[in-house]
Image (cartoon, helix red, strand yellow):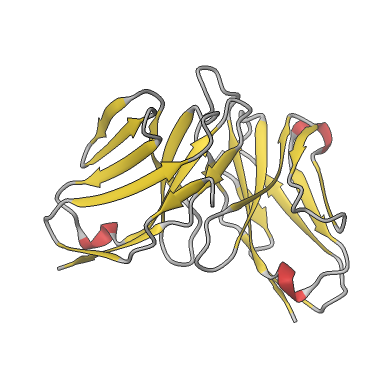
Length: 116
Length: 110
C-alpha cells in the first residue's frame, strides 16, 4: 500500500455537468475525509466517514454534493450540476481511529476540478 | 473569525536561520494539533503532531503548544531552501475532524 490514491488527477468539465471523484485510502485506516482547497486558502472540511458510516457533513456542502463509502473501503464524491464556484482542488485524506486523540492525516494527491 | 488563525506571511528567512510560525485557535474542543507542509501545487504533508502542553522536537522541527493561551507554534532550525513552502496549522477534535488555517508561506533564501 503506497498511500492515499485519488482519481482523476485533473478534471475539466462544463458547467451543469456531473462529476465523480474516487479516493482509495490507506488500507488499515478506517477514517476517510474529503476537503476542498482553493488558492490561498487552507483545506475546507466537506465530510468524513468512519468505515462505511458518514459521520459528519459540512453545512457548507449543498445537496449537489454527495459522498459514499460502500463497504468501508474506497470513497466517491459526486458533484451534480457543477458551477464555476466548484472549481477547486478536492483532497481526500485518511487516518487511523483516534485512540489518545485524533491522528494527523495522510492526504492523497488531490483532484483538481475546473468548471468552464 | 476563523477557528484557526495564522499569519499569512510571507515569511522570509536566510538559510541557516530559525523560522518561527505561529497559530491561534478558538475551539477549546480541539485536542490535538498538527503542522502540515504544502509545496506549491502539491497536497499537504504531515510534519508534526502535538497533543500535550509543552514542546515536541523532531529533528530540525519543534512544535510548541499552550492550551491555556490557545496557541501553537512551529520552529524550524537551520532553515534550508527546501523548507520553502506553505505551512498549515490544524486543530483536531476527538471526533477526528481537523480544522485548518489558511497557512503561512515561508521562503528560505540561500
